[in-house]
Length: 429
Image 1 (cartoon, rainbow, N blue to C red):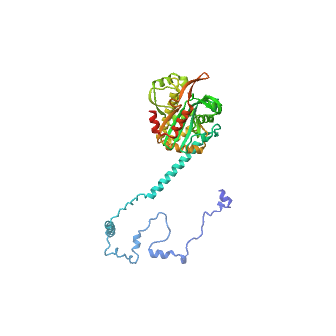
Image 2 (cartoon, rainbow, N blue to C red):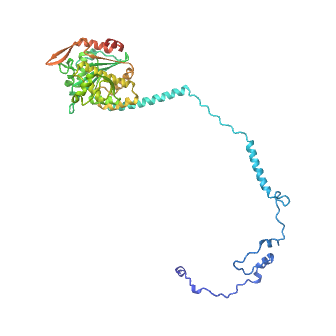
């Protein structure tokens, strides 16, 4: 084998026949004592030789058996003793269990009622959370609005305008801006003054008929009211109304037709009573109203349907047209009034990118707070020119509405700043 070869092992040197004497000398034979003591031979050991009976040589011991303890003595030892002991131990365990006092049930901790102090802290925490969330939401909405630089009226002094710290006048302009057309050069399709009256806790709407013949300061001449934006942008419309009717306007908000549709759809539509003539006019002229269908009766209109309804003019006059516009705006405000916060947030977030205004973010916040207070009250409406203050006239070959400017001025100031909602409704009836 290689391993042994490497280690120098030589198998040829193995001794096959060893004749050396390997017997134990007599003086060194220590096993004879064992042989004499136990009575068996310790001579040659053969494989598979059976052992002798151990009991036969154990009896040869001249030794006393080991002593037993008291329970296992030769006199009283019985195999049943251990079983009796086990039974006694189990009996003692059962006795201990039965004699153990019954386990007392844990008394339920009585929940103490919240103290007025805790309730107050909870309410404060909830209010702070609402204010924080509301503040973040308002900032997000305000950040999506388009802002214009505010321009002061150069044609009439502010001291000559009627104003009040408890009344905010916002001019709402609806424009039909065409593609590739600058919005400020397009004529205002609708003009409505929204007056938030904190004094009388109501909201007053005033429509200005677009065919009203007025003096336009930026044009330095007379023209239809809706042409004012063509001469000086949206601020020129504000200047014209202030100059002719003597009311202070805090700012304008501009919305195109697309924004109007988004606004209505975001609140789930508006309920409007549609006449047969109105339904026929819209449904029969697909190109004019964008292929919209209306049915007579009271229905919840979508954004496109509400826009088509507001634009109806051919079947009657501009007076009725502005009345339809105020009807839809009133319905929108009613939905806002009873709407849940999530719906209002959705409406504001979706509509904000379509809004253009010359009000600052701080002014919009104040207007929103005042509006939230007054929207719980009544909503009334009026239009300019007032009854018995106008006539149809022909100016430069066009049919217009000629007005008594002084009478309309006095009536508008009285309506916005002095009259309650109940008085306005009584006069309308």
